Length: 233
Ligand code: C5P
Picture 1 (cartoon, rainbow, N blue to C red):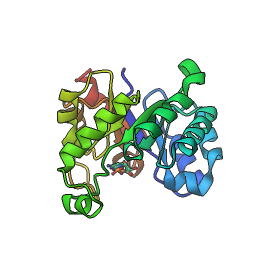
Picture 2 (picture 1 turned 120 degrees about the horizontal axis):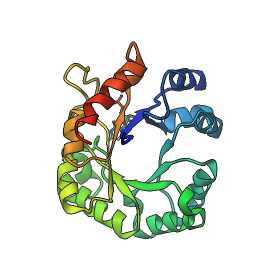
Picture 3 (picture 1 turned 30 degrees about the horizontal axis):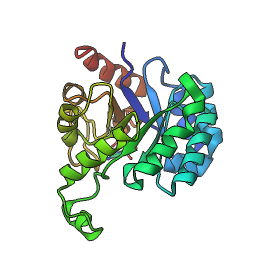
Picture 4 (picture 1 turned 135 degrees about the vertical axis):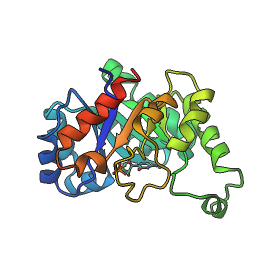
C-alpha cells in the first residue's frame, strides 16, 4: 500500500496527540505536527511521535534569512523528521541554503517542501502585499522556483493540484490539505476535494485532520480513507 495520508495532529497538548497516536497504525499513515502542538510541547512531542514509529511532517513553514532557515532545517533533520517545509516567498537563496543544509544527511534527510501562496489569501490580500499577478500565477511561479532550488515539492490546495501536476514532473511532490468525503463536515475548509479526486488530480500526499482526528473511531476513519485510495494505486 502507498502511504498517502498525513494525519494533522492539531492539538495543544502532548497527551491529546499521543492518545490519538495510540489509536493509529504507523504502517497506515504519516502524521503532521504544526505550529500549535510544536509551540505547546516542543521537540519532545516530535521525538515521542517518532519513537512510536510514525514518520513526521514538521509543518513549521520557516521564512527568515537564509542562514537562519538553513540552521533551523539542519536541526529538524537531526530530530529525525520525515518532511519539513519553508515558505517559497523567502526566495531562491533561502531555499537553496535550506536544501544544502540537508546534504550531509544522505538518505536519511527529510523531504523539503515549500508553501507557495497560503490558501487563506484572496486576490485582494495579495494586492495589499504588493503582488499584482493572479494567485494561480503566483503559485505556479513559486512552485517552479522551489523546484529550481532543488526542493522535493510543494504544499498546494486541491484547486491547484491539477494545474501544478501538468506543469511539474511526476517526482515533484504535491501535498494537499482540504480533503473531505461527501459524508464529512467541511468545517472551515472552503474549497474541499475528495481523497480519490485529489490523487487523480496528481496529489502525492493528502493532509487530513478533523475527519480522522475527531471521528468516533480514528482508526476506522483512516482505514476507510485508505480503502478508497486503494482503488487509485
Ligand atoms: O482538519 P483539517 O482536515 O481541515 O486539517 C487540515 C490541516 O491542513 C490543518 O493542519 C491545516 O492547518 C492544514 N492546512 C490547510 N490548508 C492549507 C495549508 C495547511 O488546511 N492551505
